[in-house]
Amino acid sequence: MKILVVGGAGYIGSHMVKFLMQQACNITVLDNLSTGHADAVPAALLHKGDLADVDSLDALFTQHQFDAVMHFASFSLVGESITDPARYYRNNVSNTQNLLDTMINHGVYQFIFSSSAAIFGEPEYLPIDEEHPKNPLNPYGRSKWMVEQMLEDYDRAYGLKSISLRYFNAAGADSDGSLGERHNPETHLIPLLLQVAAGQRDNVTIFGHDYQTVDGTCIRDYIHVHDLCVAHWRALNFLQMHKQSEQFNLGNGSGFSVQQVVDACRTISGIEISTTYGNKRVGDPISLIADSKKAKRLLTWQPKYTSLHEIIAHAWCWHQQQLEHK
Ligand code: UFG
Image 1 (tube, rainbow, N blue to C red):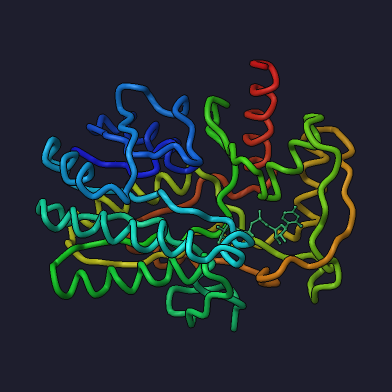
Image 2 (image 1 turned 90 degrees about the horizontal axis):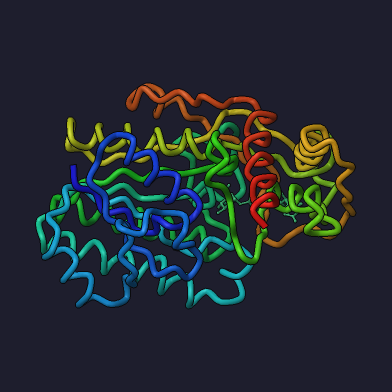
């Protein structure tokens, strides 16, 4: 199988590249390295390029006969998407359309798309299944939902078959500690807490503590990056076998509050991570928990890492290795 992994030098993409190599796939990584890291993928696989550059994209598809495309490249900072929506619609929507059009021009009809729980907005019920109404609260979520709708139209008109995987909160790191979550700036809860534990940051602000939840802080469903990779692999197999477009919600099905995540990070690192209470973050839903029954049924997918402690332990292992290499 010859697979193009767009955004393969990023957090989830680089784990996917490693996973696909273990499945003996023939891989090309396309990444503009705006947020990804060249050292996260083997140099021989990396093609530095941008989806905005349609001529180069066309040349890449002429050079390689890809069987399928996995698309991880998008901007994903909710706050930034509110202050600079143009950047999000350009990169996440227009550039994705360039990719889809190039695929069709070259007869490549299998596409796996990284979507997000952000398409749902404030939940009307929990856990959130695939049919839950889509009311994204911010341009980031809207950009993902727009692409999902575009994919529906492209299937109907051009026969492009796609699977949209709606991640809840991706977390954790490769179990051997060789890959992990590295954003700059970092905005995600678990890496921020572990940066404090590692002495790289003084404090983490907890955004809001008067929500209607167990302890007043937001609830999220954390899913290990390895389990997301397995879901992508199963999704690709499903596409090949059934030639049918689908959407799947991917989470563990259990919610943890921000305070519970803080406590787990303290226990695992053995360090009293300093936190303070701050204002609620604009666009933050109170609670997001996935109903992943459809993925379990149709993809025979079962998350391996269902314990929050194990997910955080892998992330902590990676943070410690980073410190050793400094
Ligand atoms: N949080 C804090 N302090 C921080 C950072 C986060 O309290 O400094 C809280 C947030 O308010 C939220 C929780 O920790 O309640 C998790 O926040 P993250 O920023 O780690 O993740 P989000 O839930 O905001 O977003 C993630 C992905 C999005 C995706 C969303 C869907 O980053 O791309 O999950 O569930 F859309």
